[in-house]
Image (cartoon, rainbow, N blue to C red; front, top):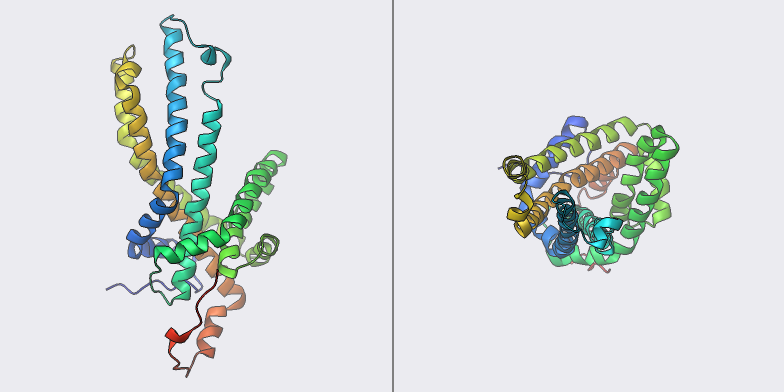
Length: 299
């Protein structure tokens, strides 16, 4: 039987990637369950809204091609970018934040409990406690990263892994947003390339997994359009929307991969800088106290 992954340890590039998939494999059912339990409904609603809006836009385009009378919305461009579309995008963003938070919270509890799998109730308690700071972190990422890329591409690439580390620091160290922001710069100093490289590779892997999941639906859709272009949209109809949403509901789980990698990068940086896990083990030598008598957590 493969030993459980020890989170708090130093790792090289290969170990970070390998332990990412080892940890996911060992905790697959729990991570999937929490993802759908805590953000599945939000993601489903967002995917439905955005897919329906895209379908309406395609229908309006088909009407124009067939020289029928398009709707007013299709003429003025609001079909694609209506209120429902932006509500859908917001729900997807919120679901993504909760998904990331659920994985990081699971890993925080997993470490705290000594590599024992936490329950969904325990993870939910963490999510409720940290959701405010998590949303603030998402808002900062939405504003700061595009601004950094617009002003100059290099600062955008430099800030990306630093900003990404803020949420793990908030959860693992129970820090404020300002503390986590400053702490992220301290941790990643002299270790930027390793952290950025591991995160980049994990996102590349996630992208190809997502592409593989979406490939069958894409092939069916493209085949229909190529062989029956005039009736493709009419024949597919809402069935295409349903298939798209189902594919997105499966593909959303892929975000677990870069989140686990990000968390392992945090532990690697913390152990490299401070070696807190080693100090804990040294302090616990000869301590035979019953760990079950520890005080209950408060949230």
